[in-house]
Amino acid sequence: MAATPEQIRATAETYIAGLNASDPEVLAGVYAQDATLEDPVGGGSVNEGIDAIRQFYDNLAPLDMKATLLETRVCGSELLFNFELVTRFDENTATTINVWDLMVHGEDGKVTSMKAYWGAENVS
Image (cartoon, rainbow, N blue to C red):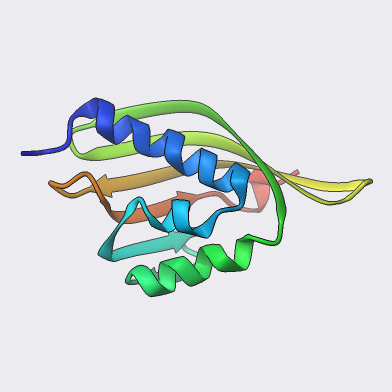
C-alpha cells in the first residue's frame, strides 16, 4: 500500500525536527537504504546509499542550526517543502538559507530521492 499524503507530509516535520535536534539518526531515518541525496542541486554532492547519507548528516551535527518549516506540498509520492535554516556560528555570526527540498517517496513511505534547491542568492 502506498504512503498516504499525510504520511508523506509528516516526513517534512520529522526532517525539520531532526535538523533542530542536530540528530543524524532521525534525519537518515526518513531515507530508504538505496536512496540518493543531492544538496544543493547542481553544486553540491550526490550521496548514494544510507551510509553516505548518514555521513552527510553526521557532518552537520556539530552545527548550531534552527530550521523553520514554511510550506509543504504533496503531489502523489512527492513532497516539496520550503524551510528556512539559520546556522549560528557564534554570538554575532549567523547564516540564513531559504531552501526548497524535493523528496520522492517509495511505497513504504521512505524517501528514495532528495534534492535540495538553494544557491548563493538564497543565503543571507
